[in-house]
Image (cartoon, rainbow, N blue to C red; front, side):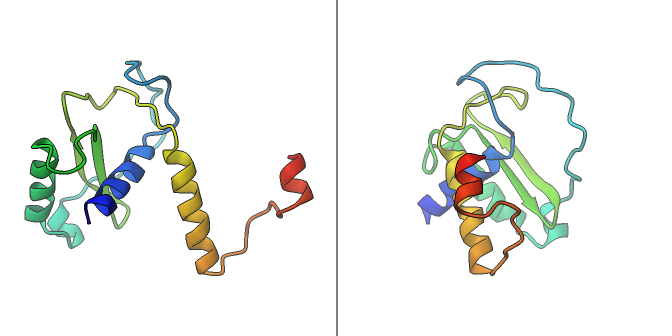
Length: 128
């Protein structure tokens, strides 16, 4: 369960975008779009469980290296927390998270028989 929580937290962190070297503080470009915000209970989530999760992360019981956790439910931001003094505007390196996230999305699409990709495996993909 802890691995799943850490994996999901890392995926949410990935949504922050492609980032420069670790720990580099820069001003990100102004977002053209921001998540609409809602309360967890309005989106069918238990605020107490989210608070317990946040507390466990702050205590280092799970995901001790996690710096940010964003929870999106029904297209709305229901929780945004930062840990260990990490500010919201500080960028973070992603390393292999992007590859893992992309492969998870591809696997999910294949499981659902989604075949609307414009790239075809083979010659076009290799020469692209």
